[in-house]
Image (cartoon, rainbow, N blue to C red; front, top):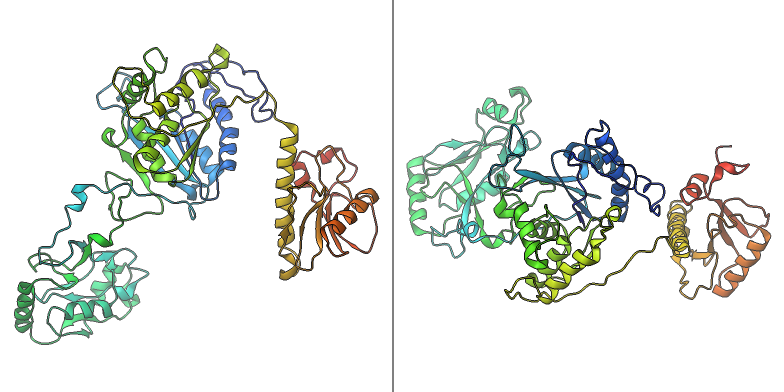
Length: 560
């Protein structure tokens, strides 16, 4: 999970490294963006966009990004995230109550909320966790009929009547004789065969009977009467007074069947839902959710300050830990960050915060691990304010974590140790070239393997990676089912990328060392050698350019 609270465009002056997208090592800061700059929103987006690209690239396929924002840039940030992640991967727009009393920060409406935009890299593989159930939620489940398990009556109707016409049918109550249908647009949750069986448990004989109800069913489904399928109703088989008497006796006996008609027998069909069958948690929605359902996406979600904390609480928490004078006027509350991590980071997952600030994200991970016995880890990145000579990563962020781990808060009150730990590292001014080259080669190998696996016959396309921990091989990366080697001519953008005679000799030596057959599958930019034992594949220029090779300066390009 990536959870972060980036710098907001609050309407005042701001300044940032505007060359970061082309040169992350550039030490200079850009020009000041004044509060009266008509392009200040565009410039803020330019600051954010390459960093959002990097965040998305760093997520696992099942990863989730949760990013805090206020109303000034909510729409702009949402547009960028929709473009990068796709609208279908937007899981939630959470609005949380940052203050609970009116503020004079606006001429017209007091600002009481801020937002968290939540996006999955792929919503099909992302998981949304449940929050712990509350005592009041469990109190809804009872056993008024003497059932051995506690239950509550659940609505027996569900959505999608148009696509489930066979589940739109009449059900006759054995108590009142009324024939019940689902509400408009709804269908029953179970087919007639199940309903017939459950209703018969009331000691009443039921049957499937054709009814003149096409118009009623068509109105529920939303089609013309001529377009509705013929479906029989579930009706009492013999005379109703006998059915009513039998159902009343069965109701008095207790431990009622699964399909009930309210606690008094006079209501609509309901289904018993047992507490032990309910997910042992609740969906992270507070205002209009069915707490027993786990949705694919949460939509718009509101959290009041009791659920999420508020801004002043965040400031007070920081002051209590490190003491006054820290200079932070706005701090996200610990409760908000804890809740987000609990919902979208698995118990053994890793949380990255690339705008760590005062370290609330790390604090939240440590506290969750302490309270719940989980094993989450965190990576915090903080630049501080180098233009002000204020690099507070060590003096504030790390200091906060150190204090909460050891229970050494600034005040006199003693606090429990949270255990855990962290290491502190300072980034050098330049990226290590050798490390970057190894990363590039690994990515290039992945590209080649994916390309090879999509070509040729299925048996030969399955590749087995070659163990190169001892760095025996310069070009060998894998082998196929016929024990033939797969070779990649790539040691960096400024090195040779062509199959030459010298490279060929090295490839044959590596094949012998690995005990491979005498057929060589070689990926390179160009083939400058003709030999029958080489099966050659060209690396497309567009891939090479992604890895830093400027193909425009070459005499040959893929397009030509």
